[in-house]
Amino acid sequence: MDVVALRPWGSAFFNLVKDHAEVFTQLPAAVHRGAVEAYIQTASHRGLTPAELEMLVSPWLEAGQSAFYRQIAQADERYTQEVEDRLDAIYEPVHIIWGTEDTWIPADRARRLHELIPHSTLTEVDDAGHIIQLDAPNQLSADLTDWLSRTEHRAGPHEK
Image (cartoon, rainbow, N blue to C red; front, side):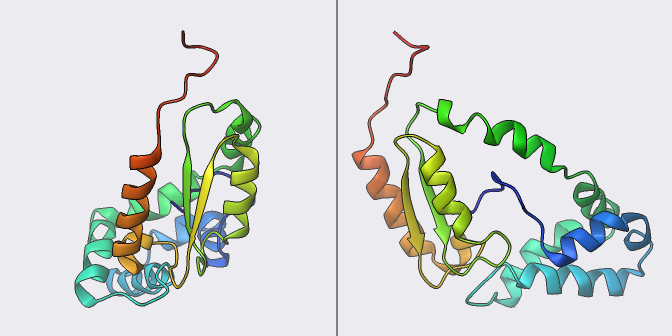
């Protein structure tokens, strides 16, 4: 679901933080909270309830502040490249689900990923952003249930 699997990735905010993580770790707690809330809200197309926003933001507050910026600073597309070049070797069933309104990782990545993984299937979820599980939980559940009920294990070349 809206996975970081193909380059390029990273929003403008993500790249700003990546380049200046040491500055962001020094933000006052209230400013940090505002930045994280604003950033996370952009992951949803329909909008987050206060409870959903708090659930997603709270791990990144207080002791989580430095971890939030550190994980962005450590992100490196070379690891994605290593995987990207091997996607055609996947033999297990793969179902890709993507929000058509994902502003974090645009839906064109879903279509490219689908082309690169043999035998994969793709569902694009209308009116959903990066966090489909909150934007369209019923459609996500129905799609996964349908796919799982139709999917059989496929033996790859490494299996007998």
